[in-house]
Every structure is written in C-alpha cells, then in structure tokens.
Image (tube, rainbow, N blue to C red; front, side):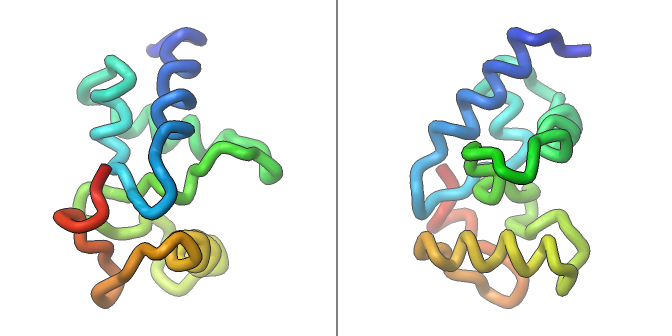
Length: 101
C-alpha cells in the first residue's frame, strides 16, 4: 500500500497537468513512481474534499473516457470542466492523441 510520500507524489503529478490537457490514471501513477497503481490514483481522487483545488477533472481512464457513469451529475460536471478548458469530446471520449499530457 502506498504511503504518505506516494500520496504526495500523486497529488503533485495531478497538480502539474496543464490546463487543456488530460492524463490517465495509469500515467499519473507511473509519473508518481507507482507503476501499476492506477486504482490507487482513483481511490485517492475519491477521497479529495469537494472544495479541493487539485485539478482532479483532468484525470480520465485509458480509453479517453470519464470514469463516472455516463450522464450522471458527476460525469456532467467533469465534462463541463474539461470543455471549459478547451478539451474536445468525440462522443463520450477525449481524443488522447490530441490532449494527453
């Protein structure tokens, strides 16, 4: 189980994702020095307080999709945040070749 230092590393990586870019859970884990810990990244994001300044919305799955159930309030919120930053969706997917950080 990753420790507090690992948590800090993940938060730093997420905070470094530029506006207008996205990153996958797995890539965040790799960049934080935690290869094969994509689920840990997701768990950590679920634990963030609602008023967090961390750009959690820039983290999506490896298929370019938002991980919340499509059409749910949380899905809509994440999609709106990404679109406000210039991210374009093709259907329910973000074209990773264009927007992946």
